[in-house]
Structure formats: C-alpha cells, structure tokens
Image (cartoon, rainbow, N blue to C red; front, side):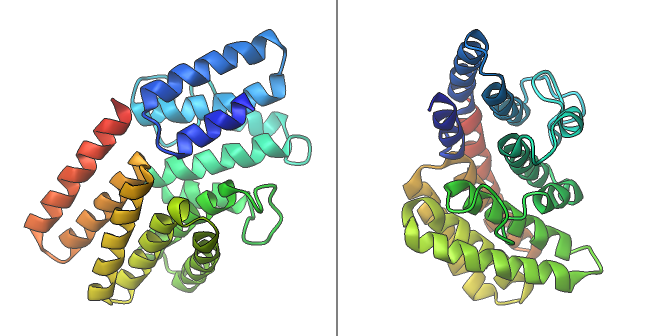
Amino acid sequence: CASLHRYISFFSGQPLPKFLKGVEKVSKLMKEYNSNSTLLVNLVYQQAAVNFSGSGGASTGPAYLNGDFCDYNKIEQQFQEKTHSILHEQMNLMQTILAYHFAHYDTGWKSSEKIHVCGGGSIFKGFIFQYIHIFYRGLTAIALSRNENDKRKYAAAVKACIKVLKIGRKKSPLNLSHQSYLLEAELAVTKKRYAFAERLFMLSIEHAASAGILHEHALAHERFGFYYMMRNNHEAAYEQIRVARDLYAKWGE
C-alpha cells in the first residue's frame, strides 16, 4: 500500500522534495522488513525523481534510469519480464517518461515497446498506469514522426494512443482529460489544423490546472510555447515557456 501511494504521489504531481522524503522513508521500511521485490520498484521511482530534480545521482545523464538508486541495464539482465513483470513494466514506464522529457525519443520508444499496452499484454491494463504510458508513448511517437522516415508507423501509433486516451477520459475526466487534449493538439499541429490545435492546447492547460498535476501542467504550457515558436509568434511563445518554467520550478522546489 505504501508503495502504491508513492506511485500515485509521483504521477499526481507532488513536489519532488516532498516525494523524495516519502520514498526514502518507505524504502527504509521495505529494507527493514525484507520486502526486496517491492523495494526495487520503489528505487526506480526514487531514481526518476532524483533525475528530474537535478539533485545528482544520475550517472549517465537525466534521461536514463542509471544512478545511485537504479541501474536499468543491470536490472534488465537480472530480472526477465516473466520473473518480475511489475518491476519490468514500472521501470520501462519511467524510462519512457524520462526519455521524452529530456528529448531522447529513440530510447523512450524502445522502452515503450517493451510494455505493449496497446496490444493488451501489459499488467497495466485497466489501471491508471496504462493511460500514463499511452500518453507518453503518443508524445514520443509525435516527436519521432517529425524526423523519422517511417512517418506512417508513428502516425498510426499516435492515433491508437488517442483512441485509448479518449476512453480513459470518459472514465476519469479529472485525471486524463489534459493528456488526451494535449496529444490531440500535437496531432492537429502535424495536420496544420492550427486553430483547432490552439483550442486543444488551451483545454489541456485548463484541465491540467484543475487536476493540479504540476509537471504535466508545465508540459502543456511548454508544448504550447514550442507550437508558437514554430508559428513564429515569439511573444506568445515566451509567455508560455515562462509559465512552464515557473511550474516546473514549483514542482521541483
């Protein structure tokens, strides 16, 4: 229960210093009671939070789950998906999220492919983690579609992710509306439906603010800012990026 509470705290946008204090406390209890399997998953979240906070402990850069608390490659070698599926899925989820935020999209896509949520083979199916993964998988596919030759593959992935997120939005509008609208906005930009995209960006920002999910509220402003940069509206871009910066700072303070 304590571990699940930590996961939800992270994804709900709890400020990182508070999250890290909580996760350190839980890790100590897990060590005391020899809950080693659950501890490994907890350490994945601890490493991700350290990477995001920039507080040190990331040995290969913030985009990768390698550092003082977690070694992605070592864990992949020691634990196969069938022997520790929870660890495998959570680790690849966090690697996908980190890689997207720090613009290592190929790494994020590879981690996302290991989860297989769209195919229904993941232990995440039916839980909030499914939709969180789908959101970042879709954003990663959008990013890759701008530079890769295989645009059809990534376009199909984006559409599949939006379909799943729309279902999630109906089930949990408070938690998932901002993700669905942001991914739809990014897709609208690729189709040059700019007026529609702007409405969707604003809806994503509005719903993320209502949900109080700091890092994804910041992300919505950030992506809206990059949209305005692409449209050469530098004044509007600056304002969106400034707000994103303030929200990220609040998340990390």
